[in-house]
Amino acid sequence: MSGAVLLLPGGEEVSGRRPSLVRSPALVRSLGRRFARAGRAEGLAVHTVHYRYRGWNGSQAHLAADAEWAADEVVRRYGDVPVCLAGLDMGGRAALRAGRHEAVNSVVALAPWLPDADVAAPAEPVKQLVGRRVLIVHGTNDERTDPELSFRLAERAKKANRDVCRFEVHSDGHALHQHRDEVLSLAVDFAMGALFGSQVSRPVEDALAAPPPIGLRMPLAAGFGRSLRR
Image (cartoon, rainbow, N blue to C red; front, side, top):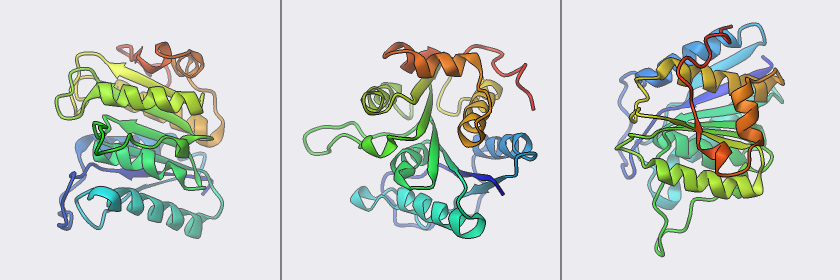
């Protein structure tokens, strides 16, 4: 294997219960299949992380800790290969936080759950993302996780790391169901470029190069990826 993607499903803010054995959300399963197909020739390993607990659980950050453990396992199994963390909802937060792992070279956060920083809760850290390529995707009609919070995090991260971009999926909700194919194509295009140095699409190039807020409010065009199928 020459690279790996770790898929991080969503979770809960606080819970000490074990995750159920039900299947991962449809978006995570679809993303896994798309990554496996796109990365077959490059020797890409794709794994879904199974958490110990359902909850993030405050300072314990269990989901991020499990993501880092999984990155350790990739190194143990496959050696020194680049890792992309791809997470949905609370898994998006875990991907961003666990980006500090030395094997991680890229992060994809889809509709990430992020805390609303206040005096009692400091802002989510971003310095761990320096040296990584970061993609955030959020539906503008998301009623579960606030797209404005992911914009604010991206804005802070961009000041420390120019390789950050964020796409907005207009009129779509939390599950990114209406434009799922475009979202999957974007995530795979971005990650394959980060992991293997392949040419990314022009919209991704433009988003990475554009100054804030342009590159952090980049609209995801309908039909994106139709000419990028691998």
